[in-house]
Length: 393
Image (tube, rainbow, N blue to C red; front, side):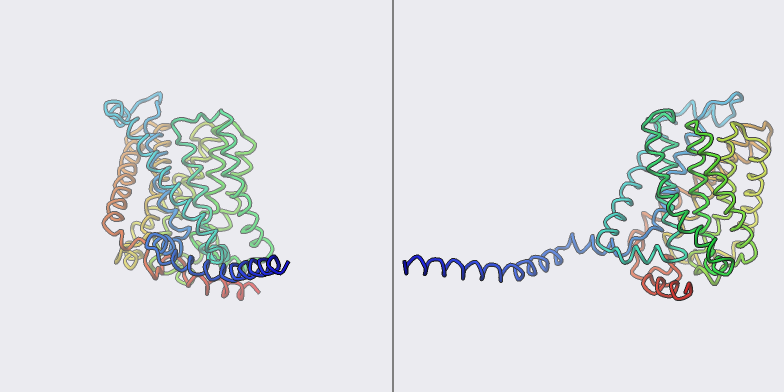
């Protein structure tokens, strides 16, 4: 009996010692894992990446849609379309689409990991007047990629399901942002409105265009009306304070190109809804063309932003691509040298800008994730959330 009691005491002591040693073992394991080069590199990437990097996917997905649109057959084929028939343009379109989806998948995966491991930073982005608008960017990218997909027909159930998956987050963000504008009033909107706010409008317009292509006219009109109503509010608010020096830093000024991206997307969305590039679509296209001319005629505005490479440079590509898409639709509807010239010129400019950004990014990979990136937000991410909360209260 005594021997059995001694054995039980010995086993219990061993169990207690093991239980006491488990936290120490886990602590040492975490320390060893954190010191691993691969995990430390991943942790550094997750700390520095943010929703603004979806500018890259926006540009590539827009390029995929542009090439698909240029290759569409029309009743009056132009010289560009005849040229595309002579080269393997379909293979180039598929290759570009695959590159776009791989880039978008990589960015989405990294941002999901950031949400899991650095939720406070994501929350700070959500509370920031610039960062929250870029949360629309991944869903806009997916919607553009869905429209340019060479393997999915708009009339299939798969397309319908994916449309809902990509649009529901847009609607939830709409409720958050537009609800604040409505309840907090003009003073709040004037303090937080900036050119990146136009991304919220473009999320609705991209959803409307995708819905119209699948035959959902009512859903398309609903999303279009929601986006355009708030675009009018933003247009007036931002037009009165175009400089934007008090809301975004100088390195983020390429986002001013979003001024003409919104009406370009609106013209494309209405073209899909009405079935023709009618007067309303032409008016929106001419507005975007005027805003584009107004910005490119003032290069001094972007002088500081171009001194050093930054991911904010990718903000140039997507708006120019949307304008080129609108010009392509306009040229397909209107015959004439001016319309054809606009299509050729803007499409060529869009391709050149995208290629230049790809090359610049490849040559400056060391600057792609800087330690201190003033172009991410106008304030450090933790400070931004607290100051915005204070200003709201």
